[in-house]
Image (cartoon, helix red, strand yellow):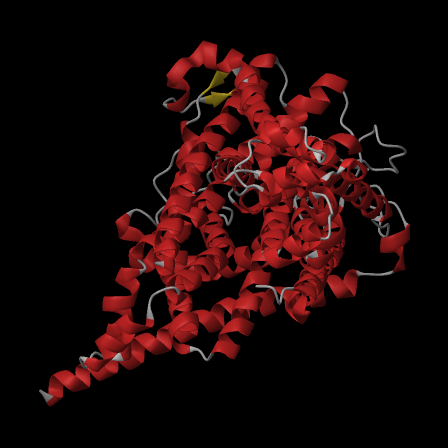
Length: 325
Length: 282
């Protein structure tokens, strides 16, 4: 054990927070430090390796199609033509739809939990909502196929009759569609919006609420015109976090989106997303170009989620740090 | 004046009620999902499910014994890969790293945590399957293990930081080295938190399907050893759910019920370990 080598002068070194890593490596705790440092370095190595592997293995597709890969909409494995646009379209539209449903809903629940509910009720409800976030996505897919699809089949004719002229709800409806995927996604991301927004709202100083109430504002006006604007940045952060989840979500979407690589301007039409085309076609992809086109799609998805996650963390930490001042 | 006031009062009442409705709906969804799986899955669950292999399409009966074992093997591998790396790196961050270095590593870890699970699947495929030219339990374990690292690190760091500094100072004043202090004093003080963090981590990857699709692939039969494709519970649910056969759908419900039950059970246990006072330090 490293402890045997400890002597009085050495013991002073590790306790100094300013000593450099290399100084400490040779000061009696060397082995432990080496091991834990190696573990930390492994994480960085794995992340780098991930980027490198995706980059190298998508080379064939990147060289052949260049940036046109992102802008063409023909996906024809038989003739070696690969364009990512239908999948980018499907991913963006389903994610946007899920946000349109989940943001108002999630923010509403977060307001209730942070501003109105007694602490005990709020904690219990939050616990249950966090359990909802723990439900595996394949289970959401299962519910999506066997419960949501039949349910939508009864709702959609109504939507078509009343909103069909807008174009968004036009065309035939078979069940699996952009709309179905958006609804399933919204249920999956709502827990993230609720629990992060609740934290952010709870971090708003009490004086602001009291001042607004003292000026005669109602409870709702206080919340909506004072508390929510103050927590705005953090709430945006929670939305970005949820969006990153939605973009990368695979199983539930694959099970209900319809898997059709076409761009149709109707929510009722089947679509395809980046993650679901990878899930469906990767293990059956034949030929170098096909595989590397799918890996390039993974690279695109990776880049998208990295940007969103980074932005989300900046926004959330900007609001929660303010609390500590 | 009084008219305006009435309007404001009703807006207040309506909006506040709506926020309550949102909350009730969110919680209601959880109970709906639980209830639905309990009814659909519970009724399809029987002894065969745990002891038999899946049967050919068209025949009735059969079970998921191979998928249950496959999932267990993949998860054991994942834990053996992900937890030690994350735990040790977490110790480095909490006890040694300078603030700048810690922030950098934390940043990279968050990046890794945000990578969609399907991309992790591709990564494990290029890393293991392409090189060994074989789908395997091993590749599935690596995929899930990589997914476990970020959370293992963040929870270790968080719980170690929650241990009061006076405990470290006390141990060092008694002449213990830093490593002795960490492993005999700091880690034991944080052990409840650490265990619950690892359980939550395990529960999270236990339901992951996407990273297994082209690493562990699937298997109709038993998968001996670690170098062959294997069936797993989540992949089996997916395959059965999208198949057109009623009998397989029933199996999918049964497996879904099992999976959800396990995941939620681990979650609840883990959270109760922490709330029973392991973290008074905070």
